[in-house]
Picture: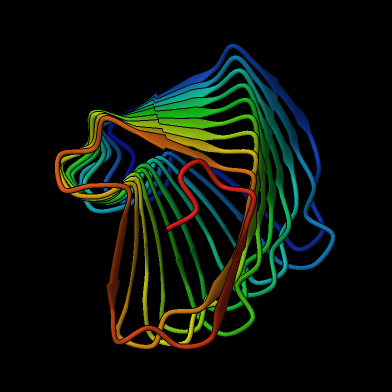
Length: 236
């Protein structure tokens, strides 16, 4: 599906469908759009790239869907964007070289992300924004980006477990504006700023993380809000 006047693929109004090894590229808006409650496609091995004004994958308005071993790259905005209480399952996917971030979760978006990679994006590997935005992110890698590996702001939440963020232009993870993530058993290494940066009233729970080789040290605290750190190496 290419050079369409809007999206390459759209699944809406409770639609489902199985899409195997499809490509959607150079469309005017999104590669694939999933929107509306109970819209729940299964997408395996898809490639979504070079879409001109949107995201490679967009799930909104309560959409769901399972995305397995897909790639979204070189899109005008993010590789994947999840919003409006949408809750997709994203497994083993790669998001790279997008004009903005690899993964964006905003405006109450949820989502389960397992064993994904986001690298070489112009913004954060994953950005979480909004008071009810709360993804579950497990075993993912965020690396070689031009911003933070993980960025949680605008009151965002999220649970990050067994993830890695390395080689990014800023921090491994940056947290601000009353955002309150839970970060466990993650590794933040060789980033060009700090491993963990908590600023502008950022909050969070940080447990058993490993921070090493970051250019400006392990931790950077600048007017943080209440936060908890336990068993990290180093812990301060």
